Length: 253
Image (cartoon, rainbow, N blue to C red):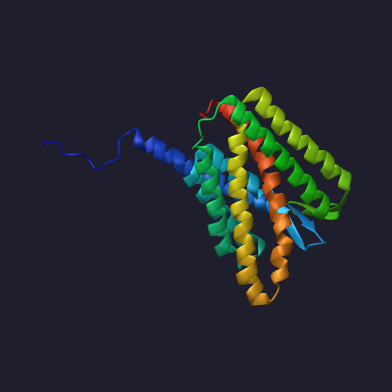
């Protein structure tokens, strides 16, 4: 009779240790990115940060579970450190859901032929570029306050900047699908779906919890374009980065 040992095998321990290390590093990066860089917009009294890019990057690199932990816990810690404890419980759930969905979808690619991949990539490129141009020109043009660490700067961004940037993003994504790997469309779709879960989650929380407590339901509506902009900018940072990291370390798609 064979008796299985309950002690982890020698091959299991290094894998577990690596997962713990990757989870800790990803969580710290999400927290630091959220705190370190933020843009305050006086017109809406809101701000966005680049923490989203680290949530997406963790999910795309290490899968749904590490993406969920890093996104939820890292973003929640940032809320606590920045002085927004009333957002922390919602952030834990919303950002964890965002990381899990982006990571799960990215690892379950459908078997499309190249023509369908390229069509999907082109459509998503136009969608991402158009949304960036529309949200940026409407809500992020004019005077903004940029925070880098402890330093703050007042900048003026013209509407034309967002229109040009949106066109560049759309063209870059389309060319990436046509000239390199058509499957990049599925990565874009994964982060967009995860990002919209974040937008919807914060809208519901701000509308029915924060808004109900403080009587400012309009605040939830004003934050929607800011969260959409945060999602788009996070994906613009994360998607090229994931391609570079995978190429350098020969990681499996």
